[in-house]
Image 1: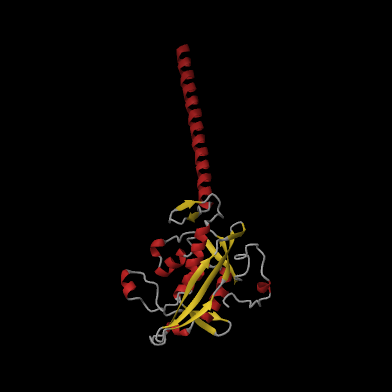
Image 2: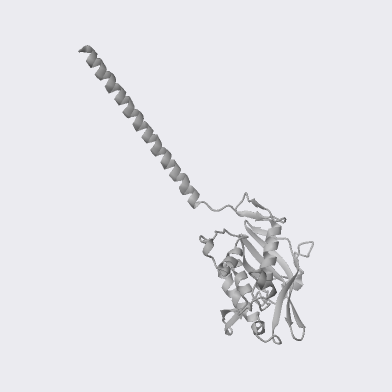
Length: 274
């Protein structure tokens, strides 16, 4: 009888120990799953790492989300402004065949305050996505007013082309965390194909650039060529949010940093395209 009681006590003790161990294991697994869930939530809301485009084409992760390489900023300004004033009358080639036989650019209609609706080139429209949204609309309106209708002419004798020839882009000058001022000296050259006449207009501007975030399109396999071009303009994680007239006698060229009276007395047209 005593032996039976001892066996029952031993069996009960083993079951109790097993139940406690099982409960502890389940509790540990539950805590582990909660911690994993919290880590996954942090990853889902965390910003993508910013990259700084180096001169040699390599990219390195920036230690600061607002950091950008000065040469990358200059290259961004250069390629954006050249694309804005690419008035060739043809679409950017998307294949090898289109290099030899480019497609005609029909243009994109933009509403303007002065003349109702005017066309801008597809290149100008795509490049405009490198500008901040509040600045882009007014900028496109003035580009539409500047773009000659002859750019889209079907008659080769009437076609006018335009391009921006950049003479100099000054080193970016930081004005705030993640914001820079970049001076650009350039000429806007319009050429009439049939007569080989050229109209050269100085286009000297101060561009204000800032760092921005960038997120990839969620369904890249379904992107059109137009969508790919638009998203590619945002991959530099930079945008132009303001443009001003550049005075060549200001602190960019003034060793002492003083602004010339000649610049201060110059009339302000209130337009970034004049």
